[in-house]
Structure formats: structure tokens, C-alpha cells
Amino acid sequence: MILVLIETGADGVADTSLETIRFARDLAVEGGGVPVHGLVVPTSLADGGSSSEVTPEVLVDELGKHGISTLFVARGEGFASYCASAWAAAIIEARDRAGAVVVTAAGTPRGNEVLAHVAARLDVPMAANAVAFDGLAPLVVTRQVAGGAALEEMQLTARPAVFTVAGHAVEARPADAATEAVVEELEPALDAGDLVARVVSTEPGVPDRSGDLRSARVVVGAGRGAGGPDGFGAVSELADLLGGQLGVSRVVTSLGWRPHHEQVGQTGSRIAPDLYVPCGISGAIQHWAGCASSKTILAVNTDAEAPMMAKATYAVVGDMHEVVPAIVEEIRRRSGS
Image: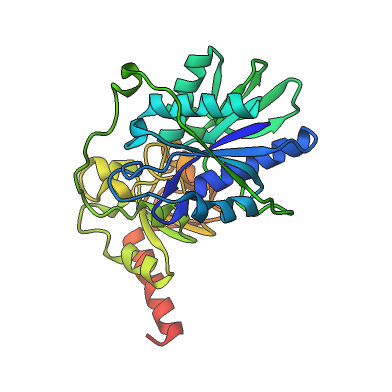
């Protein structure tokens, strides 16, 4: 049996959780077709302030299409807001009920935190950010380390095997044969220690479009080569013309030129667009960790030896302030706008 922690938002199941379910299904096939179960914690503060209360009835059809056999739903006062320790307690109870030998979650900040609690409570190792697996006896997972610059094989012999799945390691898609997911509610016993660190309030901040960035089919990026806070006009226009999103490197947000929610990289969003156009971005390891899953990369940089230029599908050696406006002009000419 395999148990997946499923994260939700106002729109339903998070894309990263659907990817993790696909990873779990592949693992289940390797195990002879064992069931894949899910656990969800519907809580109004789970996503940082906006209501993410999603009823099991809304989720059950979608998750059934993705192959979930049983959907465990955690209830109780201790789950009114996000609390990693309480979520870990819910996972362990669901694991005991299902007899799961594998517990997994998306490699999001929340997924990594909660499963770290699970592993500590069960005194088993945890592998973070897995991208592939090999065999079951023993289970060997390949995971990203050093910000995605290297891969490491980790053997998980303890049971349950606990690991998270890196974003975009696999493509989310429905199962070949849908299941009729059964909802089973549970109310784990929590003590005061389980609730010491929890979300007690949230404050509205700058509108966050990072969800759009992570799911965008086209991303136009800009780095230090933009030159300053006023150097993003052309790349923003190109992103709009291509129906995409603007993404930036860490140095751009560190300098305060653009907001953090636009950052692509190890400490920002991990993207997997059909087309990524990094302009004036050297391609440091941390940035590459966030864009390595891009299907096609068209890099623009004055430095022909920059790491991004070597890794790109196509590379244009030139000043982004000359190349990008020329691309914009040509697109407008061809579209008659």
C-alpha cells in the first residue's frame, strides 16, 4: 500500500500533488498493482490565508480519476490551521489504517516539512526531492541534491519508506483506469506538543502570481542583465505577447528590482514550460534547479560561455536590450499589431 499526502488549494488538488500521485502509481505498478491511498487536511488556513476548504465530495471524483482508492480526511480542532506536527500525526494514523509501506508527498516546503516530522516520529530515514526509483526490494530512489546540480541514489530499506517527489519529476495525468475513491474520515489524538508550532493568523501581502508561473507554458526570464528596476519593459512585453509569465533570477529579487514571487530557482518557483526564454541570466546552479524541466530553452546573453548558454536548446549571443525588442517588433509585425 502507498499513502500520498495531498495538498489542496481553493481550486482543488495542487498540481504538484497530482504529479506525486502519478509517481506513486508508477511505483504501485512495480509492486504488482498495490492500492494508492491519499490523505487530505481541509483547512481554511492551509494555503496561507485564502480559503482552501475543499469538501471530500469535490475531491473524490478528481482523485478517483487519478487512481486514488481511499481518501482519508483528517478532522478535528487541531487541523483548523496548518500545523506540521498535527499533519504528521494524521499521516501516521492513515498509514496504520491502510498498512502503507510507502509514504510520500510533493517536494514542496510543506510536503518536506510534514514528512520530516513523520520520519522523525517513526525513526526512519527520509529522502527529499526524488525524481525516479528503481526496484522495491530494496527501494532505491534517485533524488536531487545541491540544488538539482547533482543526483544521488538513496536506498530506503526501512518501512515505511518515506520520501518526497521533486516538482515536475513526472507529468501529472489521470490513471488508465479510474477508481471509485472511498472517503474515510479520521480524527487523530493530538496533545499540546503537537500544536506548539502552528499558523495562528495570516496577513495579506503582495498579490502572488507564482501559481501562474509554475503552470505557465511560456516563461520569459530576466536576470542581472536587465540592468536595474527599469530594465524589464521589453521582457514583460514579450511575455505578454507569447501568453506567458515573467520570471526572474535570485539576484534580481535580492537587489529589490522585482518581487520574490517572480523568482525562478531553488529558492523560488520550479517551472516546466514548453518554452523558457532566459535573458541576461548566467544560469547558476540554483537557477538551473528551477528551470531544468523546461522543454525548450532559448537563451539570450552577451556571454557566450555562460552556463545557461551551454545548456540551452538555442542560444543568441547579444544584449537583451537589443535582442528582445527586435523579437517583440518582429512578433508585432507578423501579427499585424
